[in-house]
Image 1: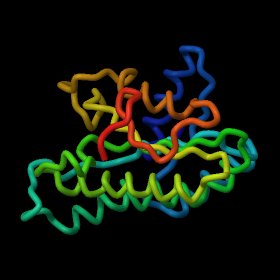
Image 2 (image 1 turned 60 degrees about the vertical axis):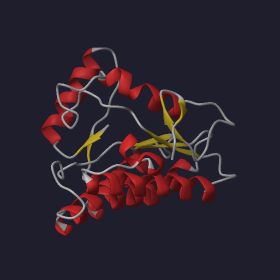
Image 3 (image 1 turned 120 degrees about the vertical axis):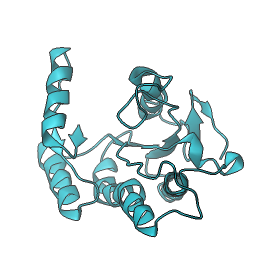
Image 4 (image 1 turned 120 degrees about the horizontal axis):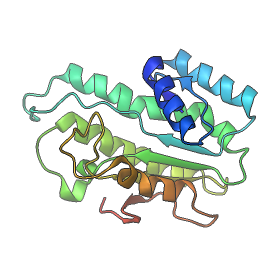
Amino acid sequence: MTARDTGKGEAARDELNKGGAEILFHQLDVTSAESIGRLGGFIESEFGKLDILVNNAAIRIDQGTSGENLSIDTLREMMEANVYGPLALCQRLIPLIKKSRAGRIVNLSSGMASLSRMRGGSPAYRITKTALNALTGILADELQGSGIQVNSVHPGHVKTDMGGPNAIRTVKEGADTTVWLALFPEGGPNGGFFHDRKPFPW
């Protein structure tokens, strides 16, 4: 498990381990090449391979903005965390995932990324998650034959720090489709966009 904030990450690890899990924590800032490199080295030395990568890191700092007044600096900052970071992480870790017998990459997207349902508001978040979906399709196609399946998930409005306390889904409910895709047997979906274990419109 990774997190930008070491204190929060270690606290989450300890809480999960109390429930019987066996979680290792490693600090990660997806906007830092050095941090990504350290994580890759740690996984390589500790395990030699990686079975599953879930790209869950994201920021949303564009609430209340529109396309015509969105700060380009805000868009750049969100692209760094929501698109460039996951891509750099995939580039560093795919060689380790290729060593797995059942490699999986699951990208946490959003219903706000659906082009067929595109609306206004939160333009930077929509743009970055749409780009993440594009990355999903690109990698899924390029990694065919490697045994790695790459998919995107729309988890719904989840009670997290980003989703807020008024969100309608629990964390467990929001994580269900991600876990389902991460553990899908050989021959499962590849290059798809899913919500509640069903294909979601692009």
